[in-house]
Length: 266
Ligand SMILES: [Ca+2]
Ligand SMILES: [Ca+2]
Image 1 (spheres, rainbow, N blue to C red):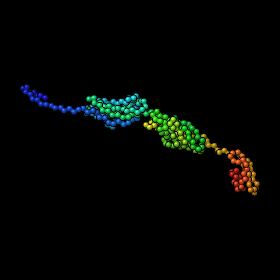
Image 2 (cartoon, rainbow, N blue to C red):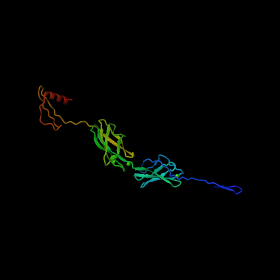
Image 3 (cartoon, rainbow, N blue to C red):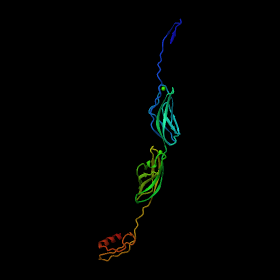
Image 4 (cartoon, protein in one colour):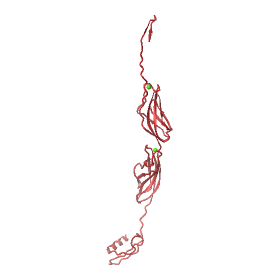
């Protein structure tokens, strides 16, 4: 540098400017993220991007991903829209500074298809023993059906109007079975079945249980019978039921005869 006065005398000195190298931007870390097929979400990093100069652009890309990924260079937030097709992707986020230096970070993006469930309509008779029925069918595009979780009214079992559903299981084909029993006073009941996949996506369906009335027991017919006063034996024979009884009259004691007569008269 040179200074000159009005008589053209000069003096010089040196100005030294030390230049340190540009540094690339910094990026926070991004969490693994799940989004529904066709859905949208935002992914927020642990820290906003920084730079000694300025962050010019923030971009994101994932090979095979069919949706849109866009980045905010100020906040670092990545916006995912139109996520498709289903699958697991590695998203690379690139921050570029005003000198063209870059820094990258990656995160896993899972595009998840929601599970499906179709509820059944079944019947039970009041007071009949518990039996197993198929209560629904489930599926999921991303995982085996028998790895899906199914609940009834939010739990492993439920009772509505005297109808109890319990012991839910799902087979590889997606058939959901459970033990279903109706009490002696049960009436028609419906239940909400919920299927949940490994990304916590859910779907609901209704299980309807139609309850038929209890019926009275059946009995065979009995013959008119007599017993001699003071006699010591009485011959009785069942005419129709149970059929496994001997058809031959069997001798019985007076005490047995009295007991049988009492029962017949009540
Ligand atoms: Ca820089
Ligand atoms: Ca799924």
